[in-house]
Image (cartoon, rainbow, N blue to C red; front, side, top):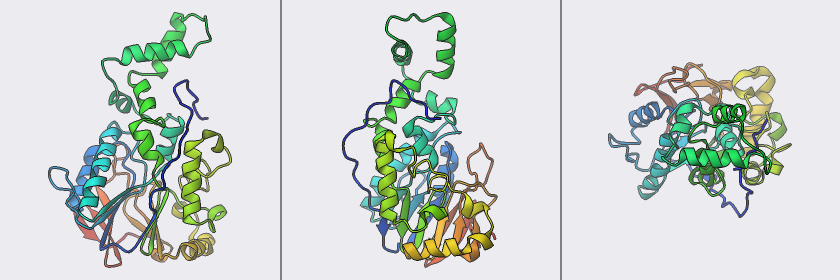
Amino acid sequence: MIRRSCLLLILGGAISFAQDTFPEAPKIVAVGDVHGDYDQFVTVLRDAGVIDSANKWAGGKTHLVQTGDVLDRGPHSRKAMDLLMELENQARKASGRVHALLGNHEAMNVYGDLRYVSAGEYKAFETSKSRDAREKAMKASLPEGAKIDDAYRTKWEAEHPLGWVEHRLAYGPEGEYGRWVRKKNAVLKIGDTLFLHGGIGPKYASTPLKEINGKIRSELQDFQKLEGGIAMDPEGPLWYRGLAQDSEAQLAAHVDQVLAVHGVRRIVIGHTVGPAIRSRFGGKVLLIDVGLSSVFGGPAACLVLEGGQPRAMHRGKLAELAQ
């Protein structure tokens, strides 16, 4: 159930379309789900050579792809987003690129499904004015003339920790992170590789890339379009797990259809935690969510594509992909 709060503002205005198709890059580094673990994220980026010891871009013409779910579960989502935003500008100046894609958790934070937001994430937005802001929001949540009793206050404050108001405003249409997330793509094509968070289910096997991105962006702009749309659909690119979990024999034809529609040779996905950077469908699907956040206890690992060859980087060392 989507939480509808008095602070979710009416959306308006056009959202610019981000470029979603690029020619082959000399080197691509793809990182899966971060889930609020800034330190592990930094470790992976340094190991891959795309940032230096001062966390500045050092990747030259490399394309860095983060396949979504920077947010939730861990306490330092805001720091991880700030880093990505800084690196976007730095990479462009060096003729490289940083592509932060939409995951289901980015979308959830935009439309108000906050069940996975950690206490530390709210804490990151807390200021000296947070108590007053929360008090005003609590009063605004009541019908006109109603009084706040002790039971209501206790319940409200438990459900709305300090920083909650600022968090919601930050992900609103005029907020720093809300504006940033709403401009992002769900699906990205670089050369002969397709990148996305969850996967593409049979329902969307023939849907063009630009249509998928356009519809999800429109839904995050107008919440009335969410029901029955792509952003919340279990077969859509933010949620689908079939490419990571279902029978390869049963989905082989579907995978080939998706590759043909988008003119690529492989699909790279996160979303579903595994023990290593893995390959499925004879190398046509690569899984890069290793649960690197301390919440899951996975390794500092990413995918490196160079010269058309995909390899895993685990703790700074390149290796062949696990099967």
